[in-house]
Image 1 (cartoon, rainbow, N blue to C red):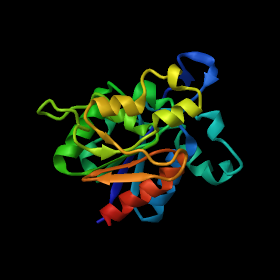
Image 2: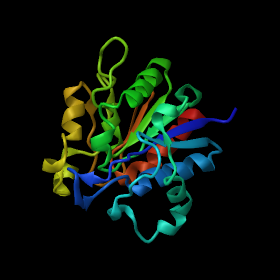
Image 3: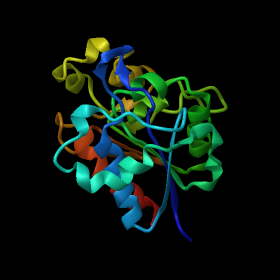
Image 4: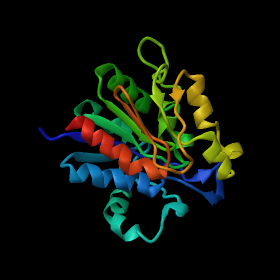
Length: 220
């Protein structure tokens, strides 16, 4: 049976609404997992909170942009999360980028997916700022979905190094820890993946491919 992954990305394109401070999806955090899943023979669909075009963080575009042209094209016409029949997917993967800090939390459709996947034992995965999707998400018994879960994501130290900690709506590491997560910190900007039960998380952009491979290994 062909495995399937729902890859969810941000629609938010500015820091604090300032058009002079563009942000969005960190391209590699969607492109690298997409290619890993495709290479494994998985079906991959890309969705975003609003659907349609996805803003790309300019800092994530580099010399290897050409090899990601296929994903860039797909990111122009994403489907809306609310329109996805998420019960059909074996795993969900939340790509990062600072845009997620604004439109992943408090999204009922995203929270419903996470709660269902946790209750059903399906794979919940995310990289870098992608775990912003877990913020405030609860299971049907009212507990935070990350309570008692070991995971990782973009750390406070990494955010400080980018001089963006004070510009974010919240500190991702601190927020997840306040909701009961066992946040595991690796070396800054180095590959670091944490697996706990059906949760698979990567700390930063360098962890995107490894996190996706961990998902593949779990599903194969």
